[in-house]
Length: 319
Image (cartoon, rainbow, N blue to C red; front, side):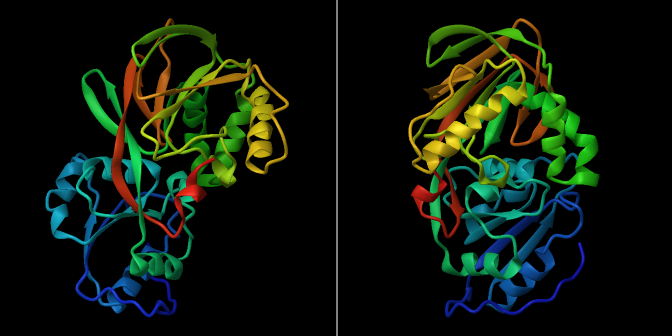
């Protein structure tokens, strides 16, 4: 990270007497984070700032053992860092800022957060927070958390293929990787959705909590991160490109342009708990991080588990 300059926050409020814990991933993004400037602005506004840098092999929970001694928490990194930190501090009632320091920063996009240090410092000063749900995923008795979505199949393969491109192409790596998924593997998925058994043939399953993809395009309509339920998306299309019409449908609904005009490529189901298995093992991703674990896995909703700082209203973060 390098030092950047900027003006102090213009809000009439201050952070006097506020204790802020900043947990940051030094490996996130391409090294152009505004985090140093952001921290300078917090201190200038009167905050008592504690910084903790993530270290390899140190559990995330170790960084927030004293979280209830702080007024606010800042998670600076990519979506994986933010969701892991949110999970480690779940139900502690300490508002958290998802500082966008990674490649895609989908959680920050879903919360309609700005990118610059000055505006982010303003949000900290204002202190407006929304309580949202999280997901808890269990693989081989190991539990982890996610804010955005978890998936097995074509979307996880896309994440895998994008890894080698992220450093050079940034967010476009995901688009380029999607273009490569022209003939993804199909299999039969075995689901147990809130106790009801369901099988389907397709290229993947996504368990979504937030609904916006890159560039704030809706994954599908009617996803709320605060309704106590996931939106489970069954990907039936033969390839990723065939899902584009469904993206168009989602945009049409978002802009009130009329009823959907495409159907059949995917199906959505609401659920609080889902078990996912497949005839062929698939890689697993959650919040943009690819994991060595494969199907089977389970996911359950954690209603109102985290409070995120944002200037957005609740309606702004629903698709």
